[in-house]
Image (cartoon, rainbow, N blue to C red; front, side, top):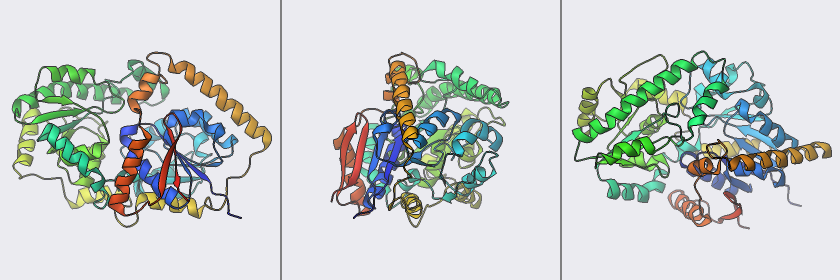
Length: 451
């Protein structure tokens, strides 16, 4: 009799940022024999009580997840987690207040770290409950590795045909320009004990104002190039579109993964944005525009970029890049920073290392322990009550659970599109024969190996 295999449950919150990487992870898991459920985090949570017992791969461990983690464990699933936001983060004490909770950490069976520094932060957390920590790297970096990035070749060619020679401006101003304005206040009140938060908010809002002036300045300084603004997934596009209306070479676009955009652009301009770390991995020249500086700056992405404290120096840095005098920042210090924060940039893929962890934990040969009937019943009832509440809020305009905001972060993906993406991964890696995908519910898919 064949041993039972745990189902791997892979929630995705921001589709443009996470889907390709988690689809690669799903393919690796399915290749090893795991059935995988992949899709919108919100809708996966709706159906949690109906799924076979397995491993839920959490993307965060915030206080907001405490109730859902309780439900997941009551239903008999185990939780393995990483923090999607841990690559670029606040200083430790602030990060702990915003991103980790002792109640969620105690329910995690294993932690997956981006790199050595991420592992250190988990170990040093006062609420760390002793779960094994594995430095696996992250599949978001896998898709940037030379042997995988061909997955994006067709997209890169299409971007260059659409936009020509373009400067990519990645924004990160959720504190000043959130898609749902109410969320700025809600997020600020979520961590009232964080003494640094008012300074962070003021700094990001000051930078936002400078970026709004910088974009038209670049449009005039480089009229032969497209100035392409790519807002953060939680940002409103409207203010940037208003600027674009006055400048024919300014474009606002944000569809798809950022990786092909970084591969296609001539240069990246940002401030404190994770894309600068991704640009360093891809060797795309990046410039940190820093018209105001503060103790609240995000050091890692800015340290991996050429610094421009004003408009004149920004134009000079960009001109140097266009003329080939300046490339991606490459020094012993920058390489050391990347190594400290990102593991698995060569050798086995991070996706393979993550599934290795599940194999070592025995999930290929067993299911998580069967919960007591009363626990299962409680978990099922709480799932249905939570889902009913979320669906009511989904109808409320401007609510963080609104359908509008969900679809902004997770647009519809046809099953044929996922099949096409799997075929592209199969082509560049010469793997994944027999991997199939089928719809489970709206925004949720099953990925497994055809027998």
